[in-house]
Length: 474
Image (cartoon, rainbow, N blue to C red):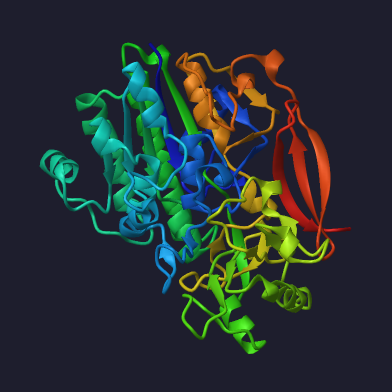
């Protein structure tokens, strides 16, 4: 029976994988199947990406539409931050999970298969990756856990979790120990996911190629190397498949600004909760969401943004609140949901090099990320491009797969590998990972966006659209 180990390196850009910095990942990619066209979802944020991965659906299907969002029915006076378990549970409104599609663990359980999660990310993201852990009696541990049976179990087995730092090296190394020295031996999961918070943490607060960022990336790669070594030492090593992924890429933030402040200066009553004197709730991000007290404000906001050289095209949950051609539908990106903002602003990035010579810079709105730090969430090519490598088991050896892929296709591929169905998922098994004849390259398309921008996209043979990049028309 095949087992699957999934390792996520949060935020890793595929063009930063090389034999010098990430030798274990580079070797794994060379010996397995690398997906050259792998993409994130929109918005390309972690707590949107993680549910997309684990449910096999885009945000419009599972309902987690942003890292930070507003829901007047849940918290009318403030923004909800999904890195916090309490806000994730508030969105669930008394249910087990706010997700509107079943997770991987829930799909495995009826077949007697077990899932385990070891996470060095935020507690909210861990809850979204494995919301049914208590009900199913399976393993979910996060570095922020301090209470409960699982936290006590890890403390007893391995000692105290190290404190958070930048770079977050001690915590990702400890998470690797939790998986290798405890979970795989004691819990024997059929599918396990190890989520490493680096290089994302260091990208944000140090920049993409700062010395401590490269040190963090090398450490994450070393943890992967230990996972591969463990697999290769097992008697059933040939039946253990490894999948390495990132949830999004990064651009270098250039031109930091606060959209809420910009709107206030323009005369709009903008805030972070729907107080009596607030008409527009703004959630800071690389693609900020705007929730309107009255949709009649939408044309005025669109006019304001159209005059700003830092603004990209406007997106809308319901484009009918604006005249034709003023906003692109979120549905085009698979991101329209009842929780979605009325309007989603984007920033106009470029393909030019940053201070380290890496392509991709963009303005951004993030209070805690410094100018020049890494950023993600938008539609820039560097934000959407992801790492996806599948190696071992029945996966092809030494292959570069050209078929379109995004995060929602990974779990369907795992289920296919295990002989299980994928009913109700938007993603599809990536059959090119198993069979070269099934590796069908997509066709390329351009979709006009407001304000002189276009969306580059791929169309898979089954008709599914995969956004690739937003750019200005040439």
